Image 1 (tube, rainbow, N blue to C red):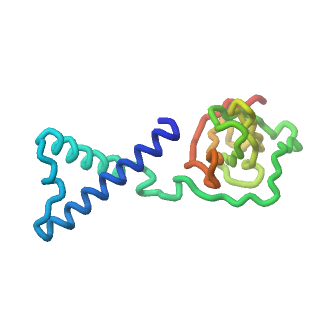
Image 2: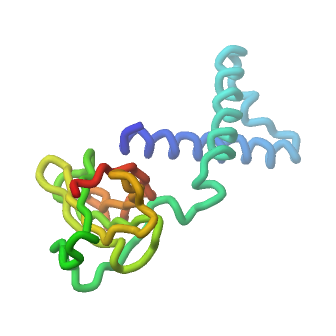
Image 3: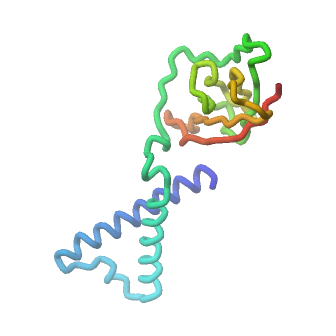
Length: 168
């Protein structure tokens, strides 16, 4: 799901959940907001959408782990240069399908300063990342976790994960 569609899906489902919650609260006072809908098929469709919205949020990992969602990250001394001083222990890879010219914060499963970094995506949404080769890396693929700066916002995206083929 692309970013805009996902945003509107979440907003719509939150609105429907609020509508369902308000209806339940008002039902305590014998007021049923949904009874204003006179067409039975439309009423069933609205009730189905409220139920599906509840299930969507119930099975969404952001419901249980909200820290995985969009967040603010304050970058001090933004150094976007890859330091390949590690020689043979330094590997590079590429992230794709990012917003153009966006800041990308990334890390591997072995969290340390030498396996994480900050870079920029280029005009076509690709970013080159660099990391010290984790000691347990046996293949040419590395699991990378990353967030990117959302366009026209100060927020960074939710956490993404990708298997990156290393170039060396």
